[in-house]
Image 1: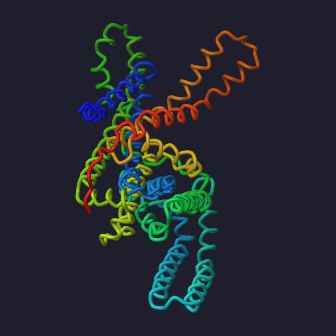
Image 2: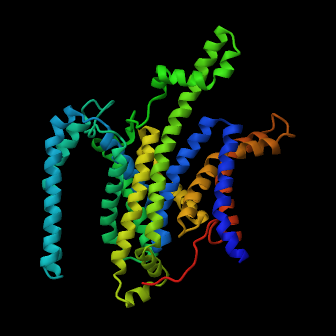
Image 3: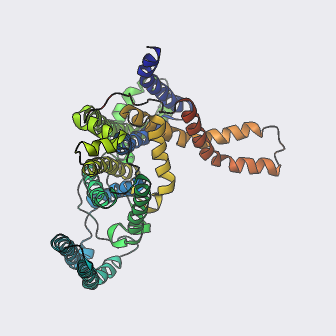
Length: 461
């Protein structure tokens, strides 16, 4: 009974501690910084839920998280950026023809594969089809790329997007990630788990390499900055009468005690600070809505017959196969769903940054962080995945200043000109990785199933 009670109390206790940590940052550092961390924690929690759907529900080891995140970021560009009409006029036709030829090639390949028996003739036909298609498509594609990327490359050099509100990219990001996941799943989900992990990591690198090098798509390493926002800009708020009146009324007590000149200066500073907080609160509201919707749907799916079947397949795949369950098809479903959630988080991340930077997607670094969120939070438990997203991202951000403060304390008694002291202070930020590893080791030692573990129960299929 005590163990069950402790498990029930873990989630409220964990989220209470997390709230106190964020409040501590707000009071000790600044409220805009605390809200910035909170917003990134909300996005991280959504991303963690996506990976938990794949690993916690079905045991799929997906190391291609950053690839699907990047696709979500690309969706933000394709939705919010205005179309570059000059680029479309010089290369749009070639791109459209190339796309149509790619679709025709895929359809022909599928027809050949399905209608010809497995033999050397089928392999030869497919090889001839792909080689011929390459040269035909490249005849239209290469000149179009050259023309598009030479349209004012310092500012544009790409086709642009649809010029719609960026919030629609959250939906498109999920759809794009789901579509690519379906293709990847068709190829890789028959592989063993370790091969699946390697394959998804490699495909993630391919996706990011394409985004870095195909400038016509999203400017490549030149980045796309100044993306649309679903919330007001701080500078606009600072000159808006209703916002100035709101700040004046909120801080009327403090302002009334000042002289006229001091009151004007103080009000200006309060308006600047309040505009940053207001914008971040707007993001917090939007991200919270998305997180709650994804969380509720995830909980409902996990507790449904489908969720019980997925966990039963995860726990004993051979028994599920013996009972006639199509394991590969079920794995494909959960792989697509989890990737779609990661794609939504990727679009949200670019929305808050206002910039699409392909070089920022580092699979070997940030995939590790997302997996830490799931493992430490508690794989198979949706609340655990959410808490892991909050806690790990908070630790990732705060580990560096904490490391510097710790090293300052350790070296306080050393000579100010000491080379050792200088080296230790410069190396302090690298303690971040040590701290993350220590958190993982301590969690695995004392709570091997995560801080908020999955509740074990019998699963029927």
